[in-house]
Each structure stands twice: as C-alpha cells, then as structure tokens.
Image 1: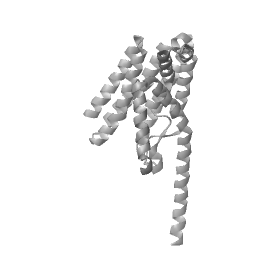
Image 2: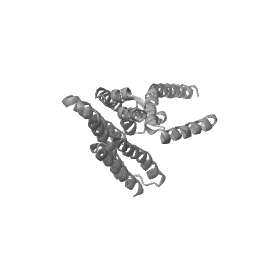
Image 3: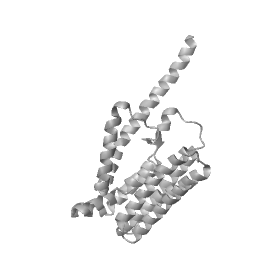
Image 4: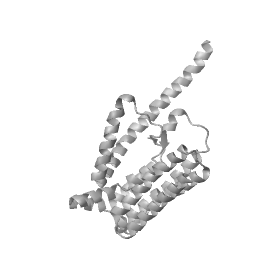
Length: 255
C-alpha cells in the first residue's frame, strides 16, 4: 500500500509540474518534476524493503513514469520554448514521448524474460526514464541558471527552439538504444573509496541546495560523459564472463 501511495504522489507531482508550466512558472514546474524523480527512486526500494512488490505496483509505476518523464518534460519544454518554432516545434516532443513509451514497454517486457547474466543486472538497456527526462530538460535548467545570473546571451541560447529540439531528439535516441547504462542499483563502492564518494555526494547535495539549476545542468553533462565508460565497463565484464565459461568445459574435460 505505501509504495503505491508514493507512486501516486509522484504522479501528482508530475501533473503539478504540467500545471505550473501552463501558468508560466517554469522554475516551479522543474521543481515538481524533480520531486517526481526523487519519489520514483524511492518507491521501488521501499516496496522491496517492505516485501510489497506486486505486478499492479510495477504497472502503476510504469504509467506514472510515462506521464512524469515522458509527457511532462516535452509538454513543459514546448510551452517554454518550442512553441516559438511553429508547427515543427511539436515534432521533437512527439519523438521523445513515443520513444519514452517504447522504452518503458521494453523494460516491462524484460521483466518476464529469463534470468540475465549476473553482470547484466547492473546495467539498463538504454537511458532510464528519469535520467532521460533530466537530459531532455537540460535547456530549461541552463536557461533558469542563466536567467538567475543575468547572462542574457546564454539565456537566449537555451531558450532558442533549436536547443530543446536537439536535447529531446537526442534523448529519444538514447532511450530506445541498446546502450548499456550503469543502473547503480547493485553498485558497491570499494572500501578505499567510500569516504571520497560520501564527501562527493555531500558536496553535490550542498551545491544542489545552494544553486539547484546549475547543479542539475552540470549533472546532465557528467551523466553524458559517463555513458561511454558505462559501455566500456559492460563489454569488459561480458568478455570476462565469456572467457570464464570457455574455461569451465576445458577444466571438466581435464578431470
């Protein structure tokens, strides 16, 4: 019950973000979608902790994700900048939302698949929904930061219809791609790096509170830079697993 209530609250946050966008309150709209992302990161973990996972909860969570991370970002970006692009400004919104639906459908279908190799459980196939929404909304984060700092040139660049069109289209491709992306669900920090990682997270949290839009825009850039490293890590683990499988039959034959 509690995880489903949290999912419902996340859905309400996404709807509130859309309403704020209609009223031209784009900072509050982005905040509402950020709250929805935080709730999405917690409801599944709480369900597993309380042993309250269910098929209904998974489907409800997926529908909430589609609205909060598939519909709301493109809706807000259209109101913020893309409507100035005329009839073509709607095209990247459609692309992003459709690709988000396909990505979530693929994820739901994978729940019924046979057990994956152990190394694959640490990776998503394609960029996950909340991260995709964050990448798509990079121009809004950048524009809000530039407006706060009084950087008119950067603000106008971020609000140019071309920039959100590019981020929506590019993120749409990443959503439906087969790119292996770190999930961090089962990520274990080696003991020597625990303290530096904790300090880094604490430092980022402080920056997020002091300068949220700059911190979110910076996080988007860092996330993109991590994608090639994630792909490299996946293929390294895959080769190691395949080499181990090839060694096992030869060891049995020797016995």
